[in-house]
Image (cartoon, rainbow over all chains, first blue to last red):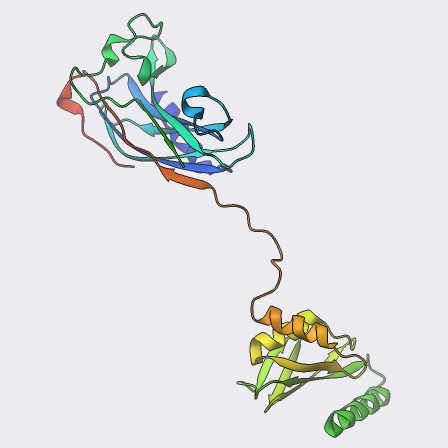
Amino acid sequence: MIRAALALALALPAAAPAQDALLEVPVRVARVPAAAAVGSVTCAVFADPTGPASNVGYLGSGARWFALANGAFAGRITVPVKFDAGPGPARAYRCALYFIFKEEGRTLTLAAGRLADRAAAEHRPAFAAAPGARLVHEVTGTF
Amino acid sequence: MHRFALAIALAAAAGLAHGQAKSFAYEAELAQPAPRASANAGGVTWSCTGARCTARGRGGNVSVKGCAELARAVGPVVAYRSEIKSLADASLRECNRRAQGGAAPAAKAPPRPQRTTTPEIAFTGVAPAGDTAERRP
């Protein structure tokens, strides 16, 4: 089942959907629990330079999955973004890391940015970031 | 010019004699000698000698498109005509302009997607480190 989901997740980006922006996101992930076979990078783009913080000028978003091998991944993810919420050009972006994992037969998505929030419903201690390790769960910038 | 008139006369005679679909003589004068003896342009095969090219084709019409194709093949064209029609000066200028690549774009190319490289996303968890072999896509 996991293999099937993984195959589907990997096949989706290959469909090369129409996009208006491409974000190349270097990703380095390690020591993720084995329950997570897939990670994902989701990006949103904005016409307003302050968009990543304010959500003003939202243009659209896109995501791309990547397979975790033994809880790790190092590579560059190309995330296509379609401007289906407004016309470009894009001025800024925000990209964030997610983990997809199995728990009690369910497939759950965990935002890496929420890992530190112990009060969050999706908090999973097993996914906690290593103390002192470099953690960049979200990146923002301009075009 | 006399040769062209003769060609027209011969063509007309040939057409009448054989009762076939009308074929017309075409002629183009070039700004300089043609770099090749023949060229396919405007749907016909041209034969070139010096700065003059001739061809035969149906319809007798002349077009900027056909002229431009010839100009691309053999160089700037200063006269382009058939037995019954000829390109006006303005059309000749357009012909040569298109041949030089200055034609208006036929179809607008789709815009290239905006592209950028972001800073690195990095995460190291607390799962056992024994099996964290990294993988590149």
